[in-house]
Length: 203
Image (cartoon, rainbow, N blue to C red; front, side, top):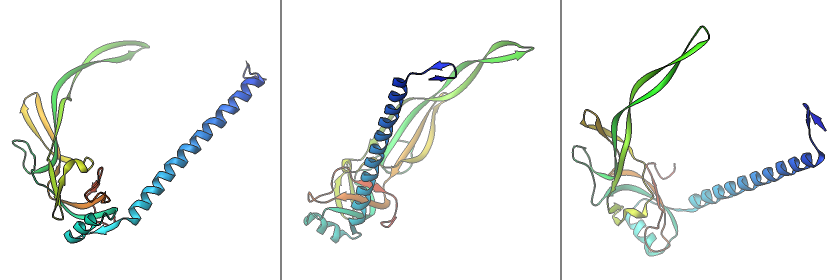
């Protein structure tokens, strides 16, 4: 078989068809696994017990009730922060940025001839980062370790200049957030890898 001047054998055609078939099968398999996982999670959420009162939360743990959606205020028992940054936080990150000079070659073409000049520009580049988090949090009167909850969404807090060429940028999850926690109470306590999101229980 000749295609655009390239000789292609029947064996190569068969091999190509086989490869396409295998890739399609893999794609369908992965897609099916993703759909099944998504359906499983939706089922877990829809069947979870809804809790909005401290007594119900305590009862759910005492009776090992299983999956639960717990709505309320999440506060830090031992809030964290940084000097010069207002507020108390469950989690807060500090990114250190340095004002750095860079160079690049810029092409210029005149009458079909290209020459290059060196251009200088400056950007704020990250050189270090760290995150602080409290040890314990409280929700509906129950205190548990922060590690039980997956990392929270951290909003921009502010930027503080340390010097003319150095600054700190802060992002944090403030203490006192109101939202819903998806957790498993089968072990008689807040389960590992619980998820907290700032939304009401029906969202």
